[in-house]
Amino acid sequence: MPAAQPGIPLHFCGRYPRLGTARGWPRTKKKIRERITYIVRGLDSLWAVGTFLGVSLTTAQAHRTAAKHHPRRIAIFGGSFDPIHNGHLSVARAADRRFNFDELHLIPASRPPHKLKQHLAPFPHRFAMISLASTEHPHFVPSLAEAGEDFSGTQLHYSVDTVRYFRHRYHGHGDGLFFIVGADAFLDIPMWKEYETLLGLCDFIIANRPGIRPEALRLVIPPDLMARPDAKREAEYPSQVVAHLHKSTIYLLENVSSDVSATDVRRHAHRGQSIHGLVSARVEEYILKQGLYR
Image 1 (cartoon, rainbow, N blue to C red):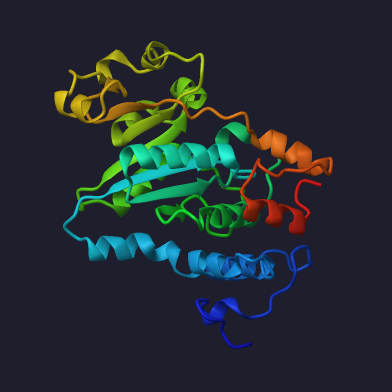
Image 2: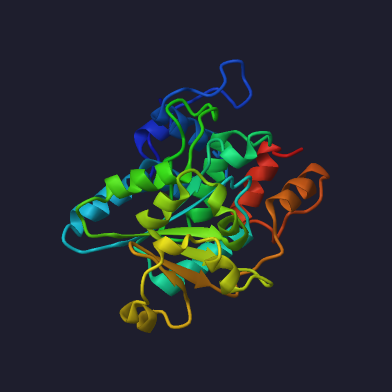
């Protein structure tokens, strides 16, 4: 095994089979991280990715240890991220600016229940692209919360279970948990697993788009979950509160609409057209080098 490069753990510097070989993807999280780093070898951002895959995946635990008695703001933002594009990053940055998160976890879905028939790029590719897109944002953490034990992408993951995982992970630290979701997805929340329970497990931040009014968002919330207005929170975030629930608050994030969609990115890549400006430069380079969506 060659010597480790500065800033990259030794186990990232070994040689592994190229993507697409008969051996396929390894089945342990450690080996997956090693393989992803090997795949992006040669990119200018390799050292940054090595840092994220080798170090940043444990930053949450390190931060909690260092700030043991300081309540933290933790955001979770999940999606197919096939691929993660500038629209996703715009929402994440806007939410981070507005709510001043300590950590914002970007969670690629292993197998979204509402997209069972949709073919997704392999999970390791989507995770690698999230890692690349996160390198310029110190609060962003690429998450393996829905990776599954073998990274096969065959396991179903529901939002309520993911939020429970984060609640358990941060239990006892007084941390605030925020769930970032698009307005269209929130309008469908009554179809989600245990959605009434989910609405009480954490605060929600709804990334709105033109044409959707706060009143429409309130209509999907069961009346018995509603609580009286919280003057303190309304003073902290004026005109941004959609609803106060007994155990949580629903916030609205305006002016974050984007014309970029993952479908457009995949279509452009498939046709050999430029995806410049649709995704970050590092993600663009990764897609081109790996020949994704062709």
